[in-house]
Image (cartoon, rainbow, N blue to C red; front, top):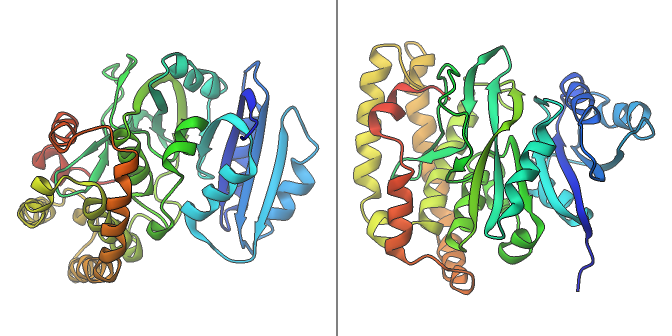
Amino acid sequence: METYWDGAISVAVVNWNRCALLRACLQSLMAQQTDRDVEIVVVDNGSVDGSADMVETEFRDAGPFTVRLIRNRENRGFCAANNQAFAASRTEFVALLNNDAEAEPGWLAGLLEAFGRPDVGMAASRVLVYEDPGRIDKAGHLMYLDGQNRGRGSGALDNGQYDRVEEVLWPDGCAAMYRRSMLDQIGGFDEDFFAYADDAELGLRARIAGWKCLYMPAAVVRHRRGETLGLRSLRRVELIERNRVLLAAKLFPWSLLCLNGVFYMARLAAGLVAALRGRGEVGRFRGMERWKVAMALLTGDLRAIPLLPRMFRKRRQLRSIRQLSPRELRQLLWRHRITLAELSEQAI
């Protein structure tokens, strides 16, 4: 039987060659206003820019919170690194903060307020665009019915429309908090995802197991978008597409999975129309670059295929934690769906 540090919080921060951003991120964590015990677990994925040494020299003994450093020899990805932090910590709550994000002083306290209800396993932050903090990056998540996910309110001006506590589908992994008992039940991140859609897979798996997620508007983070691989990175496009397929294969009810190709083609068509108008995700790219995007999407689909047997095995293993029926899951996804029009116009 595990013994946990009751009421305490661990904050996992994964880093790869972002020394300056990591410093700003950790400074924001050191300024948190909370009466809880807090430990910060930095997992460095083989950085060569001095990030790990910076953590040891500038933060390990700086207080007010304990800072622990895990050094990996190689880039193990977002999923594996966060799982390392989960395993290394023994607190009742575990938060995630991207190294390219900075938390407002009340962030941790704001998230913690979500857990007064025993069925709440996840808390979502109000994530604002760093360069334009009057604009929403994400306020929880939505999903399109082919498995593509988007931040709720992404790109919208913050006019108070997201000022109330409410249930959302799952939190963005950029800035989230999880209940330890939920992670013990369902497991951590699926390391086959490496990066991107990993938070969607974990969050939807938790919803299938009966856990809820609350959006906490007072928990504010500012996020520099696309710093990991870059907003115009084709590798990013490829991973997002590959993981969309894997998520759907692992978690979607068969009634939706059988229609996946139809929803996917509708999304591609809508995205093409938006791109011709300079809108949406593909609208960032110009000329022949759009053909490269198409090839990245195809590559992502092809790279998903060898992993499908493994996803179907994991799908069967979900029976031990499943609380939602296929019908209830379908209704949940429909209730928190993003429309095709919104999806095609947005640029994440």
